[in-house]
Image (cartoon, rainbow, N blue to C red; front, side, top):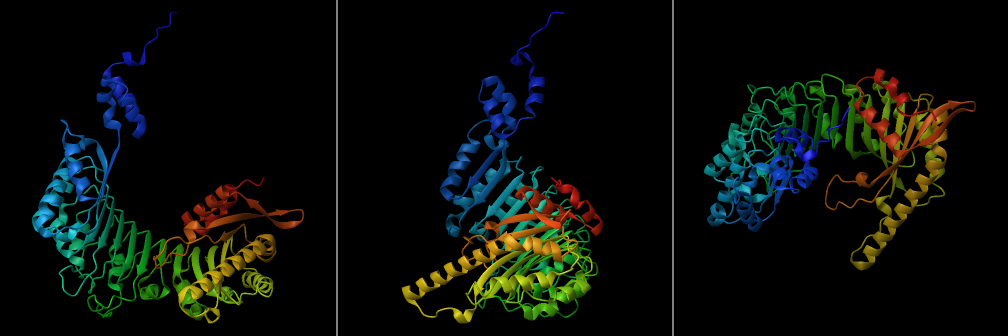
Length: 521
């Protein structure tokens, strides 16, 4: 049989368009630039990302995108505006006209960012124009807006496209002399118009009053993040019947130049739906809502350092929530806290625990390391955990810090920080050498142990950053052999896969599959 050879470019346009439909980004761009014919067939597969951070770039961007016919605007799928504020007299010409014109032409955008202070000067007319442009984006699934307030949200109203799946709103701070208010009504109006929204993040939302009793429910919401909000804002959780994850950063101290504190609780917070994952920055904010939590949660994370004096509150929280897994940040002394047996009695479902321990030290490693590890092993003896992480960070007691000002005091502080790091490294080395075996002997159900190694925190000025993003870890799997239970170190990839599995586990029965994730050599 004679073989017929067909050149790729001999295929008709319909076939080539189908082939090119599997291309994305740079691959599609390289094909589109190879010839005039292929450009018209493949260019629509090029994903264009446009970022604009200045008024000058906004003017150039308007000319560049709209200069061709058809315009380049149809290829833009990721559009980010990070524009500064300007004086009201220049706002219309410098921002309003070019911005709204660009938005009206980029109808295929999937991800949109509108950030920085320009929103504070947006008039009602411009708000309607922005809302109309967004409404005409049928593929828009993610939207992030900064410096919003009641006035802006009220005018944009129900203009957001119903295709939105993720929404992030960062409110501008309320001041006593302006009209940048925060209240539930505009927010409720927007959420009611988004039937597919599953992820909502709200920053700096500080309403003075709770939402009204006739507010609708939002069954599509699955993930809710409330960052630096007031207590009444957290009551939004009760409007999300299917929510699976709630993360809250509560600001207990309001700015003195802001509005008066919100009204105190006049009635108990409304009941919450079952929530799989709860993440709070401070236990005191979670305690306000314990009466509203009617179901257990599978995972609990409290990121603020909890001192031993709050052990009773922690036990009460675990009694109400009874998580399968927990992530805690504790401040301890020479005794790593001996309340674990009582905690497990009140949270019988707990099977994996990740601890970040800030340890107050006298600075003498020889007198500290071995006794502290003895206490740590004794604290967890015979507890029914399958996974345990310990991340130590040694810190000097405040009483040992040198006081004073100037360069000398700064050098002393830097020297003390170096001592803390050195002492932490010594403790981590000692733990890596002896703790896995000791825990394997003391905890008959333990299958995996993770040792967190503190990294350097380079994020200055962030109140809750503690350097975990810079951390590394080592993992051990506990196996049974001829010589009894013994730890075997596993790779970081295997350890992370086990951790990801645990965070998705919904019941204790799921943990029975844990052993299958890592081969036994």
